[in-house]
Picture 1: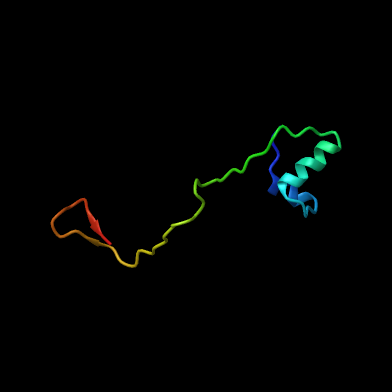
Picture 2 (picture 1 turned 60 degrees about the vertical axis):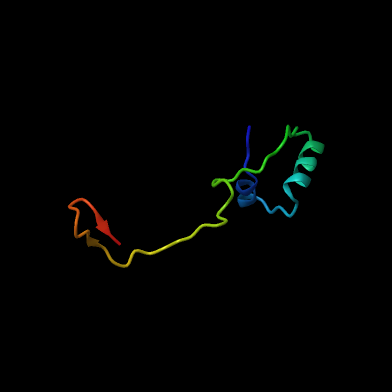
Length: 68
């Protein structure tokens, strides 16, 4: 069974790191086969640029193109 460390933190107060918590749970008889860090976006949000389109107009030489 996979359990998210962040999900677990929503229900109980945890000050230990995931590594420390795995040792504690194993000592209590709950065998931890391993753990891995999972990112929903590979590389995180490093280098992400956000922009806002302020204006849009029809391209003067094309019917199916727009300029922003």
